[in-house]
Image (cartoon, rainbow, N blue to C red; front, side, top):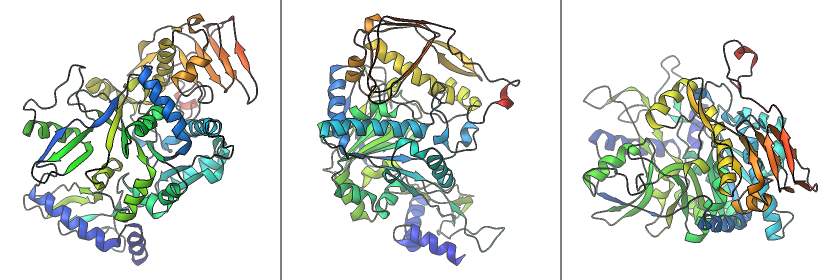
Length: 535
């Protein structure tokens, strides 16, 4: 037990005494029923609402593509795929079946594509963009093995740093007594502290300070299974640069009452304190009703809430970020959510712990810090993969978003199809079909690798005559390589084109007609022969 306590003491900023002290303060607030948002009045924060493909969007993409040569990346990957019915780590799951590439490979290839463009734009052939991956005890060894077995998916080993999240002691009562395992009195019960630990680890490891010292300007934080995130990265960084934001959250339009946190600007009525932070959906409605909107969260002229939905992808300005972590010692704002046994509020139904969230970092900032958001339509930037088929079908009924493996995959295909339609290509529409009870868009399967195109401007340069490009509903198209141009294509089947670096491929006056690749539902008859990752 002493060794375990020593490890826990070293892992938490300020040690266990600080943890217990903060726990007692937060438990006292929980017992009194105090509302952390009491006295604050919400308003719409500083931000940019972009329409994909618009001139303004392309302007922000151009700025961001240039600025990305000064970026670093942080992947939050501490979770297993249990909610998906998968026993492995989520970043090992395939994002889509056309290429079969796992999420981690997709992310690394996008970073390497930004790196390649940065080398050209900055004239620096030695440019390397770093990636930090936050793991947990559940995912750390599997992440190492996945990277080593695949030669780091083309990235140099030195570019990748793994930082492992530790757990914190569980608390057994309102006095913040550390909970001991009833089956083993020499073992402290520990629980996850939350993904806000990523900030603590970047400080404790010295990475944040190192990146700032190297002249990195931007740090992108992103989650483990959103395959569309890098479609938004150039514009997201571009808005950060244009608005001079210290923190910029990628958001999507949200419907009033939707179970998604919102980015809000808060000002305290008496102290004048200002915050731009994430407000959880179950807090936003009562806050609005008690302050500026008796009707609560209502739609504006767009049909959506004026308060944008948080995707938990954020861009931080590196230098002030490192300085803030230095001043706080890496401590993050925390909360506690005890389930009391009775009205005395002294004992818990089960042990609790302090928690912290990555998106609460802005609570550490001064009132003069520039914090804002970038809003993009969901189809071009956000398609989470987190629910098994049964849960996904239920969620689809409630929200219209299943967030399953099949819908995340379909969102990738549809996103590329929609982008090609925007520039003038003739792409057959998709239709809704059920897979495992989950309604899923099925249509042309299009995957354009980041080496081929990362922005709308690049896409337009690669499809020189988009009006001469036609794809049927059964078609599959995969283009992989920086020097591929498409002048004229009539596709009714499957076409895969991979161009090695230095090879220049021109597709002109090409008609392809074959059986194509068909998505077959997994059934009881073939399920056992299919890998767990694909199931």
